Length: 386
Ligand SMILES: *Cc1c(COP(=O)(O)O)cnc(C)c1O
Image 1 (cartoon, rainbow, N blue to C red):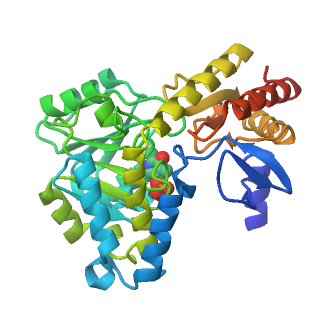
Image 2 (image 1 turned 180 degrees about the vertical axis):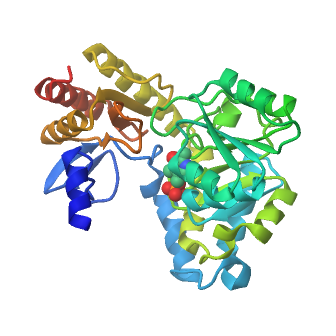
């Protein structure tokens, strides 16, 4: 039975395989006995391997153990959990924050607390899969609006039954296109139509905004968007997620959010690493400056070569290719030329928009990026993309 289904996936170039690296993540990694330039990591600021971050993780592990030993409400709340939560709340300038074991779980756990049966959810067509699953699980009616199209959101709000509880759901920085949600327009619509706005800033945290507070800081919308979620596994180089917001919301989540309650507390080492990463991010602002310099260098290089990029304004630089088979062929050619950048195919992205999703980090050197551009040109020609 499984074989037949796997064969069907293979016939559409949709088989997925695990790619095992034999080194730590970084601008270059060891893969199949070779050094390759890695252009696929979400470790945007190189914090996963930063000595202070690693040290914090080791010390917390030695002191509190490899695992928390219980769920948060039982006896799994240890000093690293509480320290991380107060560090996030201070950084995000909210009353409180709550850690989850992953962004996927946070989205499953928060959306259902914000809305339920009888409610209406309006979600961006390109929302992350975890948001979509959270919307489905909530039991609310779930409508999709055209990507980043606030006029479409307004049309749907006008048509809803008066007084129906409504939640607008969006990524802050879209993970597969690298563009931003129109947060000022969405927040204004939420206010005008008495809806709630839920922003997932997994990729924006640490990357966007003057001080790295994220997409909401980028748009100077902090007073208008009182809570949001983000993850610890991307720019913060650790693992897990958080919700930052008013104390009442956090208390409500602690009391009702099943993916928070019924799971083992995140490992103390991961919490301590994320807290240390927040510190490093703030006292080494040059990391973000290098990230943006690399973003400019590489996106300009790709455009000069003639690649078709999405309307990205971030370190996520997707090259549109077309079919899943073409994207796979291109990714294989890139690997043959010493660059690891993944082919992203349906169902992660809509049909016909398969792509190579490049991410640059602060840690790539100019030489590595220039070397990667040569590989993109050669591989693009061989794969028939250029
Ligand atoms: C990565 C990601 C998640 C999932 O976070 P994990 O901590 O990896 O489970 C959720 N939302 C968005 C937008 C993401 O990019």
